[in-house]
Length: 381
Ligand SMILES: Nc1nc2c(ncn2[C@@H]2O[C@H](COP(=O)(O)OP(=O)(O)OP(=O)(O)O)[C@@H](O)[C@H]2O)c(=O)[nH]1
Ligand SMILES: [Mg+2]
Image (cartoon, rainbow, N blue to C red):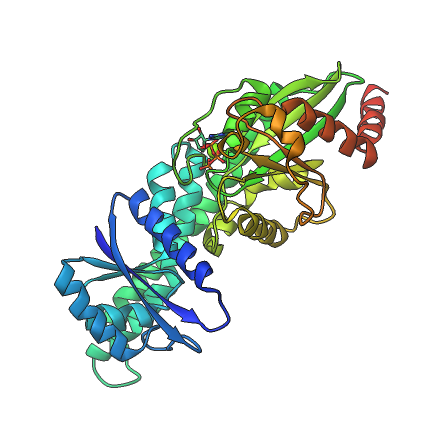
């Protein structure tokens, strides 16, 4: 795919915001094996309901696409089915949006049965409303207004097939999920009287969550300089302060404008975040946008229903901004995060002890240790 990136610049957004969002979109294009050739942005007060960008701009886009030999245009925001149709007709190449790309990447990366099912579910959920649009359009070929043309019948059959498949996937997911929960319990069973802290690693994709899990527990999972390397949750454990057991779960990464279809499909996976006592929100501080990434992760957490859970901000990849571990102490404390923050390098193993201390302290302050002790006493009794 050789793509032109496109979007609208709504007045109240900052120039850098648009630029960085497009840069990220370019990375998504690369992640599906394509190449971003350039971009076309239009300043507008609001998107055009029929073409998203203006109709005139769409015609201009056609010339640009022809001129530079692109075979697709990728929009930075979700398009409606009719906008896609209108744009495809006018511009003459494949029209995609951010959601399509993210779904494509997830689809290519899914390995486990659970991940595959979840991605399929998200794709079908994404496809369904588009079929409605298509059905309406095709039905016009079928004859008079109000009759059901052959196009609409065909779309109706397809819709029914998709709905049945969605139902089936949800059932299968429930089964897979039950099994996984059982396995997890067996693998990381709590011994009698043991104190436990359950920690979930969440964060923007590529922030270093899997690297941190490996650093903390020596558990190997896929670590890669890729968007969305991990789609499955991985849980592993270690001891801290002698005999407190830390159970740590690595999860799928987030991105700005994460498609709601995906959040919905991965909800069960992400439920492990809801079960956790403490959230470690991992961010890559060598990335200019790390604060925005934290905000967008916070938004997804809210969407998932996570609230009143202690969050520790883990500011990772410190080795990219300072020379040595000893310089961490002289970094200014980030006053703009609303919780304890620990600067680390998961890669180099810097400041990991402070992170562990912060976890124990947060657990003590939140009464988490005491509660799990009572729980285990009840188990004993
Ligand atoms: N320099 C440096 N690189 C790091 C550090 N932590 C992780 N990385 C690199 O960043 C990239 C992403 O790391 P992962 O651990 O796979 O990131 P992730 O958050 O699990 O990403 P997803 O699974 O895609 O959400 C890899 O190339 C890592 O080697 C760090 O502390 N310093
Ligand atoms: Mg990962």
